[in-house]
Length: 93
Image (cartoon, rainbow, N blue to C red; front, side, top):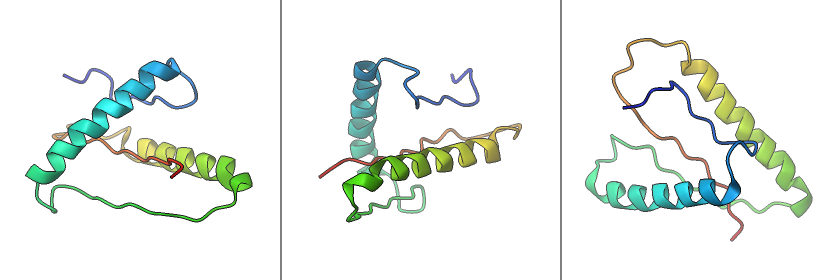
């Protein structure tokens, strides 16, 4: 049972190896769920973006701002009836 309305793991709140392990576990769980849920239950997208290395910090900041926007939008809602995970990953390929 979720006790906190919002759990945010950004900005170094947790130890890096622990949060990396948590993300790896979540991605494995998602891989299993993707095949068992319909397209109407998920929102799946993936962007491959060419970018200058010098702009990576700005992209990271924009991702964090978007996460904050989502949190602010839903934080005061009451009587939630569903728990979803929203993951935003930027990984160098």
